[in-house]
Length: 478
Image 1 (cartoon, rainbow, N blue to C red):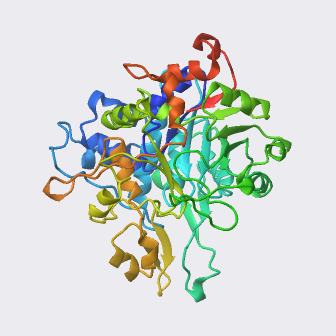
Image 2 (cartoon, rainbow, N blue to C red; image 1 turned 180 degrees about the horizontal axis):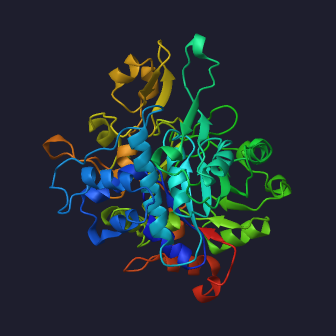
């Protein structure tokens, strides 16, 4: 659950009850500085920052972004620098600090396990975010939406505060630079890490949609993998595209077939634990997963609408009302995400899920997490996003056809958690809510006052949490 839906409060609640609570670190620099600009009610962000081992990063962040009395109504948030491949010292510092804060707060005051989730596709900030999570003692790293082959080796190096690197993905190369093999480098020593005690290296669980990808990662990853999350096409957020020829149903959704089913027997034969995700969020789903050889399940949708999740209360209430009335629908939109991956969208009036609302929004790209890197004629880097203004995208060499239907997920997902940007003339960015297909699975949990993370776990495991908390292996990830 990206962009602060699976926030530290939710992950902490799940972890305290003996399961694996997972925080999202996607866009975490923006999440942190917007919380600071809103005054950091209760002081949790600043309390975590005080434990960060590199005080200069903390000092500069507070000086620039903290507003003790909060942000004036209608005043735009100050923005973090957009992610870039070079000259990114400040941006990496914010990403490192934001990830540290989220994991620190999720782990505070208990001995439970906490994981961090990142999107492989959001490449530029990931190394700094991973390192920040490691500084806070994160136990697991989960990464999907791409092929995270180089992540295990990076974790190995950053555990010793050594420089880590990824191959830089460049969408469009100029012929003379095509084989440059350029690397994206993060060096913790640039922030004062030299001489610090080694960190514990977290377990790595790549999120995969096929046993063949799992097998390839096990053989060719740059370091060891401790298991897999196997995610089917009914899961929320980004989905892997269908294999084979593109086919769409009457609603314009991609059609998944037999080739998109994961061979669980072959996955089990890899010899590593795995967790199943996508329509397994029920007691029967947990039993089916375990009967298939899985260690457990990853659960998103049930937790997304519980009291502890980061979704804004008004959105949460609206979706739960729609579910109760039998009117909640989820569409797999093949065009919504600038990444080109199908993206699950909940249809909610007044949000970016509605065509008229989407068309009325003035295109702007000012967060930039989903921008792609392309090579300029002089050998430098250019950045473009299919959801930015069409003229800008075309000027940078993009095809106007690729912009059709593309939504600014960066700004919309911030709005989902009450951190939407204010624009001119009182306009604010609107949300775009994502969930797994089976929203009706929430019905057994619903009550007049909503439900909490503990209710989800009690329901899934058909047991009292006092007994569940004694389990040593995480069964459900939230």
